Length: 237
Image (cartoon, rainbow, N blue to C red; front, side):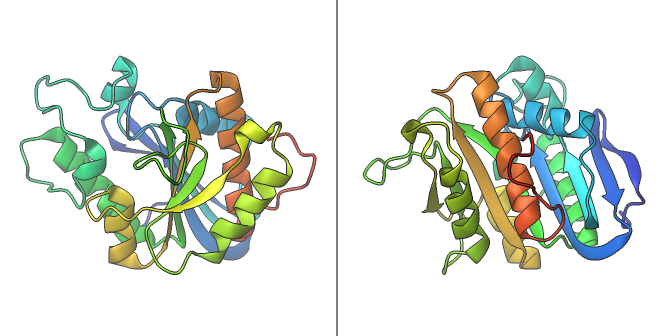
């Protein structure tokens, strides 16, 4: 796979990447959602942001709203076995295998080739969690920005502070969480290209509309912090 031109690209059947280039030079950011089909707020957030005209002010922005469309349609973590879908967790198939009989492994390879060709400065994957984060409950992820490297990337701390400054209630409190998982897609990508890798986790205890709004805000703040998209306070997230 070569570096993509600006526009809409079908990476695999029913898997699309929206690629935008700004007039001003800058970093590349890749934001994706729907790697787990039952975590839907991130998909809705990216679709809404695209519909609202999200575009980079500098550099390049790549958006993949639905990484795992079959699982997303079924609203389950992994697509139930069907044809060459093997029921595998796509998030655990990286770096993938383009010649594998299982579609999840081939799809993981497609995404891996994308990041190897594009070399984004940031890869952000939108997730959701049924457990509200508490440091004494492991694993628990809801309302965290998860990273796997040490020390914590400065972007994480800055964006968490900004999220907490604008949260609607104390219940929405955000926290950074260091939780390396060597087999996760994010960690495999970070190890391969050395980018900033972030998993955004909203808590499913909030209603869907609020989770979507929070995901939108996180995306815009992250893009602002890495220099791709200016975020104006008071702007609709």
